[in-house]
Length: 401
Image 1 (cartoon, rainbow, N blue to C red):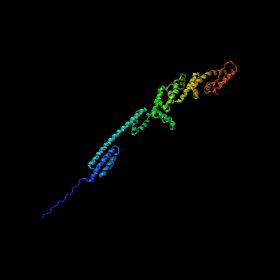
Image 2: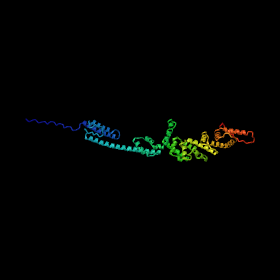
Image 3: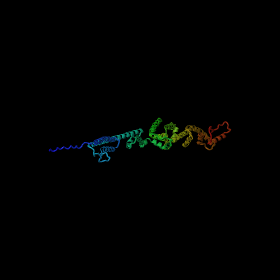
Image 4: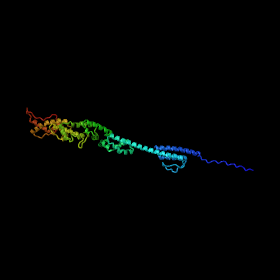
């Protein structure tokens, strides 16, 4: 009997080398997430998120989809995700790192260029503004680092310029104005200090006025600072020139002689500057005006052959005596004095002074002494017909001195 034939065993299935469907899906998703990570990193380089957060997101995506756990989970941009990542994925991550480094470099270069451009823009602004204000452009070299590094706006830069010594010297009148009228400004009685633009406009207009009156030597920043600091309007500048300085310039020889006594600086630019700016070490402009009128009163006394002291002339000025009144009054006194002197030599009595005669002429006060001489004269010549008598009577006198 023949031996039965062996039935060969069925072939065993070969080990499956291929990836399971689930693995394939995970890998596909992982690659997609790596691509997304690349985009995230690009966004980071463009400033949309922090670099570390981008890498952190990349690690989370890979671990989540491929279920790998990295060896090093610290949050640094140099972390290498190698555990369980195939060579293709690792290569992609390496490429993205290189791309990120390049983008970082580009961003750094762009940032440096932007900083340099901003610095140059601020520097140009400072120089232009300095030229507009008439101050040294060298301030740009001094303050550029301060304003550029601190990120000042152009408005803040402009304010910073106003703190420089150059600015304060150029617009000295602003500080003078604030100091002179601090209380009035606080109370709202005066406006705040002028702006640089208003200051410069004032200077230009004042220069035209000064040049028109032949005072070009006074058209300078020192004069303007005094005028602005004293709140002297352009109209008042004109009035001071025409009302005072013009009177001085057109003075006759007699008045000029008196002026040299009353005003030691007469004939110099200091005198004109004092009239315009409102002060000298001794006088304010208003005082100068009063003293000018006093000098005119003295000149009229001198013209009539009389003399009067500066103190007396200033007293008459304070009473409201003008040059015109002084001329008429001293002419009358000059006419009366010889007669008064003659009668006094005849009848004696207390002497009638020039001050008493001035009081009659300028204040309407009759001199009691002169009245007594008049009465004596009338009594002496009473009943003498055909004899001329010396009369001291005056029409228009009133009151008693």
